[in-house]
Length: 254
Image 1 (spheres, rainbow, N blue to C red):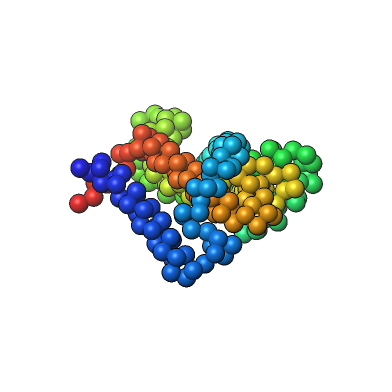
Image 2: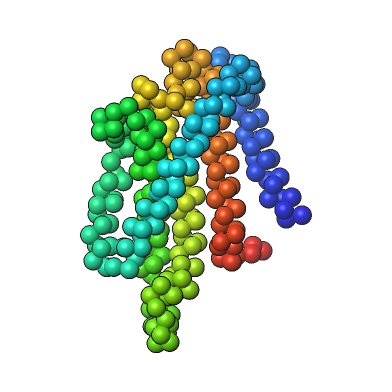
């Protein structure tokens, strides 16, 4: 029963959202160049399905690769900040300052630095926009580690690696996966920034730009829904990994 509820609840919420969206367009009498309704989208998917397949794959693999880089680099920076107070005081202002910079302004910078490397630029933007939450969560998780546990293991002769594996890593996992869920959506934003702004863009972002250029508004909304679906799928992939590696941290709800 609980499993059915977990599946049925989000599906029902999506159906309600679609119905309200359709009703909003119908009540206001908006044409599709003002706001496309859900009933306008199937035609766009049928007409452009090869572009949705190829563009969706382009967007997905570059987003996933950028996210993997964010996990590796963000975890490494978080570990450095978590184990060193000096490093934490030095790196936090730099990370906060960099995260405050609008990432759209970095697209032309990357394009000039790596001319013609569209895939690399797209992956880099997905990485740059998504590593900050991971680095901060890992750093906070490790810096708040109870010193009593560490002292007990040291008194028993445990090495630093053993302390990290037995105490620090399990404690950090819930924060890590919480940040990873945020980074998933941010990575998609980074990917689509480059795909839309770059003159050589590919993927769903370029398909969205094509719809805008040709005033094909149902296509634009269809792309937005496709991006939302990819984001949801990747989010639940992270949820599945969280249940495997940090399921013990989930508290049963009454």
